[in-house]
Image 1 (spheres, rainbow, N blue to C red):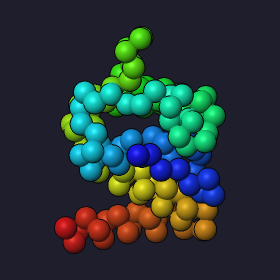
Image 2 (image 1 turned 60 degrees about the vertical axis):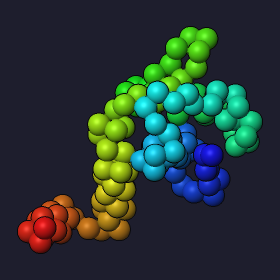
Image 3 (image 1 turned 90 degrees about the vertical axis):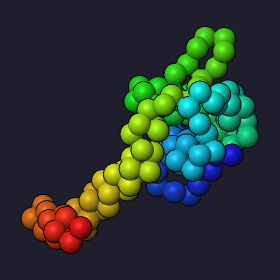
Image 4 (image 1 turned 30 degrees about the horizontal axis):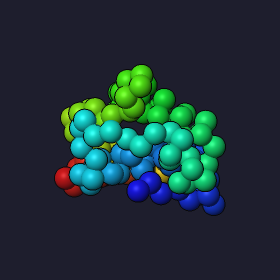
Length: 121
C-alpha cells in the first residue's frame, strides 16, 4: 500500500507522509478511513516503528489525520479540502526551488519563471 525508496535522499518519514497524501489524492484513502497501525506499517515496510510514528505525528500536526487512543488513526477531510494534489505539487515546487538554489539559481531568476508561468495561464 505505502511505498518507500530506501535509496532516496528524502527521509523515510516524509516518504511515508507523501504516500498517505498520494493515496488520498488518488481516492484510495477517503476521509474517515482508518490507517494501518504504526507497528503494522513498520513491519510491512521494514522500517523502525518510531519512523512510522513520526510520519503519523507530522500528519496529525498538519491536520491530515487524527488519532484516537485505542481506536487508531483516521484520515480527516482536510486533504479533500486542501486538495491533496495541490499540496503535492506545492511540495514538489518547493523542492525544485531548493534544488535550483543549490545549483546557483538566484531569487530573481526563480521569480521571473514564476511571473512568466502566471502570465501564460
